[in-house]
Length: 623
Image (cartoon, rainbow, N blue to C red; front, side, top):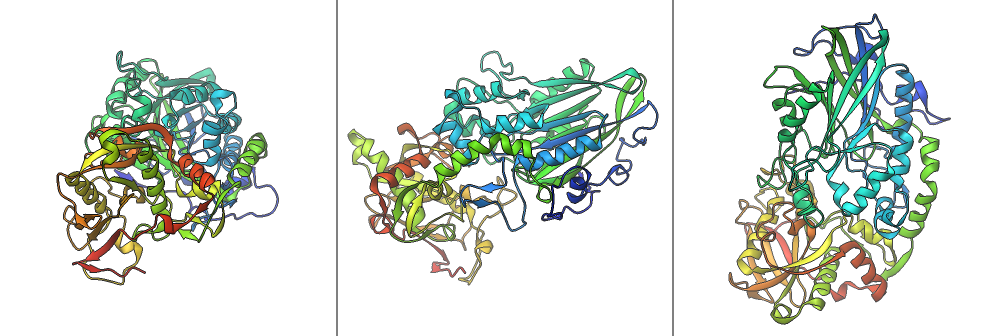
């Protein structure tokens, strides 16, 4: 496997700030390298050159790709009520990507062009949430991403795991609203094992000399859906491995006469699984490239990383397969150039190269922006509506290294909601709750609290459950959660980055914040120390409930979200534990409703320091 980038360095912010940045100017500003720069020479057995447009025996196919748009139409941060910005000064949104797509289509006019997406389109912003839950598309609204993507003119999109977050009815409604197929060869019926969405698309182009170029696009989604959205798909859809299904469908595409096979895969390129080996691999694009013959290129999604150009050598044919991943949220556009040569009456790929274009250098497309503007304004008004107030400022910035009141708030509301619904013996058990720091930038200001403040704290569309756990299981759960911390000796001072986001076997790029759970008690504190000088598995010290050491056979009820209870993150015991509460209540909305009902968020009601980071038993200083 090799990575090669032949494009110029991507600009990190708008380079043209006056007038409409479109067309050739847009491509130049975005760092586009033309054919002479992007061809990349020979690579492996893809090594025969042919200049584009010279003769009838050489042809170029351009594949434009996006992925993980996550409901971003505009360069707008609904949680900050401001233009989106980050430390790299990236921009987001399909409206900006459309400017680049139009420019590429103009630059390649008369040539065959595909426009694909690799999944996760209908979840991720308040804009997407509003039209799934507040004014749902199942009641007649048109999804803003359908409005935008139809204007772009996609040829096909792979299903992402987040497409299943709101249930199959919402997904099927979205499918009807878009003008292109949603592909999922490995989303199959449990009985027939046949795909319940189109597995592929075959597209034919009339090219020079009256000839036909036939391109097959195979869509693959993520096996983890079976865990992450178990409540929505169990008994309805199964998700076999990507390699397994590609092995079936790529030969079918070749038998159907496809000269070129492109895969759009919602599965990362660096082989790993957040859920261990309980299912086929989560990130399997490189495995598909290596193990399934006759694939020419893969548009990669899911991992939210930049891969301008990577080659994986197929183990059967020895040919190199091109992989490209265009980051996420519309920050980049993938441009894959496949040079084709006519041999023995068929088109074959002779070179394949790719690059990423940066959307922060261009203006938004006026047509896409106009199509969604009214929906955007409705959502802006909604998220800025005041639901209550906070007695003091509450911040999540240090939630990954210390017990902070804003996370205690989540645990309090969750535990309180579950306890109010319990009956019988369960109602008499000690009540616990888990919460993770999803967003370090979340905060409640002193004074008015809006919907967007609460939504910025709880950014996922999880629902609330509760399970019965023993004391030994709670300790195991905390030990697993504590894998989030790097093993560090001494008491510091350390920076947050020096102690968090540890690399593990299931998180080779570092454990994400959302996989660090703090556990808290409702009627009495659950207290514990996390000794990060110790190896993972032996870090939880002094575990006590209401000041008494927790016995292995003690029983608790623990409030938990559906992602975790379904096995998301691979936390122990909870997937098999008895469920004692499941009302399908969305946690974000539960928090909003609590604030609206109680009017004031007062940390004195729920905040306490229940857990502490230590090293060798001594408190750690973290700057």
